[in-house]
Length: 293
Ligand code: FAD
Image 1 (spheres, protein in one colour):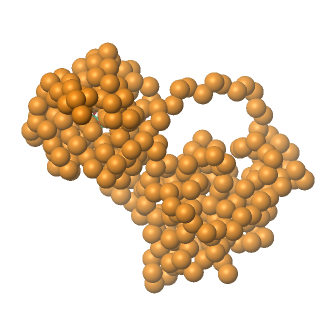
Image 2 (cartoon, protein in one colour):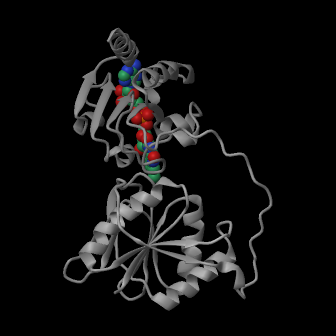
Image 3 (cartoon, rainbow, N blue to C red):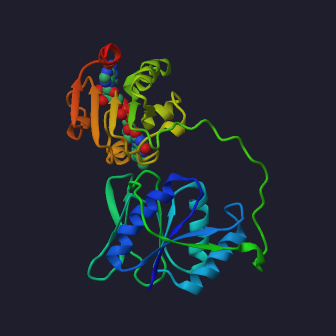
């Protein structure tokens, strides 16, 4: 039986998201789902890439999926180049074409204005990286494969120079409530009221790209096409106009609530609930009423 592989990055939530999606794709295409780990090596390394190359040549998987994480984005292109196959980066959807079993790898193009479907018909494996938060996690049956990279004959060309302290993360992945501020927040100190609302609801605070570009919030908070994909139960956008690139990151939210003073703001086209008003009046009132409960 041919196989569909998911690359294992221990402890990263994207792995269970890819396994859930991989399970559905494997069932559709009649493939065996496997989680592939590289034993004992720090990623990415030349030895790890070489070990995976040898394993791919041995078992000839049909599909190989990676998270679009720092490790996945370094490892997957290096592996694809060594295998002479293609790689579609930053996919936001994956589908099997029923007639052929070929993987349709779908990703935004031209700044998110169109969705491109990329296919790798002539080479194997069909490889893709997928951004964290695009697919929902779910329990899935799979087989595990572990490779041991130590006996590789390839010289190690990558060298670790320094480990930098990871900046404080934003807890956006996995949050049930996300409250996001856009340029309508007016100033960085005004995010205090969103922090307060997030604390009352037990949620996390996000930001639009405009806010990150001005320097009001760090990039870890950015949601959208060039930021994070999130899938909360409730997403509350405050002073966010709702550009298509922003929507790209929140389309998996169950409920979208928009607070904006401009009734013509594009976010009202797709919000489930819309509040036309000044966020500096609406948000404090919301906090007051929630606290009363
Ligand atoms: P604005 O568009 O300036 O909107 C501010 C909103 O606040 C307005 O609608 C206004 O009516 C409202 N407002 C003002 N004052 C108040 C008030 N007191 N009360 C209530 N409402 C008020 N954007 C992202 O967000 N994430 C991305 O990842 C991303 N990636 C991109 C990638 C590419 C390749 C490109 C080209 C663009 C990308 N963008 C992204 C940018 C995107 O196109 C928009 O420019 C950006 O989302 C706008 O941010 P904003 O809504 O905060 O600001």
